[in-house]
Image (cartoon, rainbow, N blue to C red; front, top):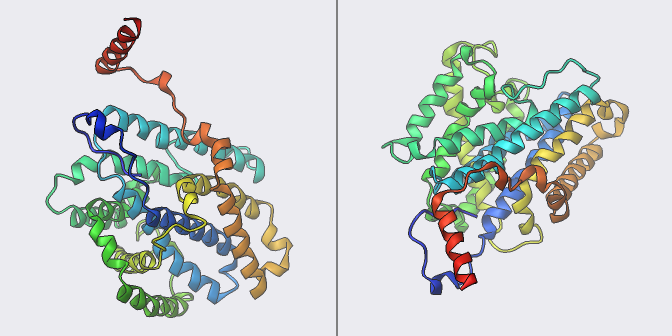
Length: 367
């Protein structure tokens, strides 16, 4: 849920009121987005043999991470440099990044028989790029809240990144900058904007838009590299002239925002059986990557020919959705909370206000 903005302490009567419940719409959106992420990873090895799989892969990749990032930005609107929020940023984003970057690197050494694979916190591998990106984006939130045109400025930075091959791989800054506009869009959105896309007429319009996107994806599959949707390289690194990067960045941003709006239009607004799983999407995101990469390292797609049949592709899709669903459940959250949400009170200084409050409580108890 969104952090409470800073302000004076509430009086006892207000504090006694029950906390505002989570909006099921956002939990539903996060769960469905993470399911699409897992399905996309399951489809990737099939795209070389199936034009339909490539088209579906490209369409889903156009909006599943942008939707997730928009939501991340929306719930970062109240972030500032207050001590408790900085602590949550460290324990909920930075520490999981360090742990999982290390774990993924060790996993690659073992599963891919690559003992020389480096362990480097400066070069995120596979899924961990999102954590370092979220850390940087959230730290810059106060800046985006004071500039006059935050979205155009973020888009300008994305354009510059797309034509700057010298940025390199450190901290995956290409992705940090090229996905930045979606985070900033989330920062500037208001509740009424989500109400607009959830209207009945928008839901109906979303159907032909998705159908058109699939047709365009089917046409583009043999003509366009899906690497454009990863936003991890400049145009020059992909073998194109710099101006192609400008055009593609603008075009993909527009397409991604339209498809993201269409996705939000069809997200259920009421409590569903999977609503509670929306709180565990980071668990599903980080943990399913071990199976996704392991399936490549161990040659599952080459060993079992049935996965390349139409029924096999449907089966792989359902399996991926089921696995990531299990990984979002409360038992899995409890098992891995030490890595995802460590408390780490021992690591932080206690400010004078907190110490004074505790002394006052202990003094009152003695009296």
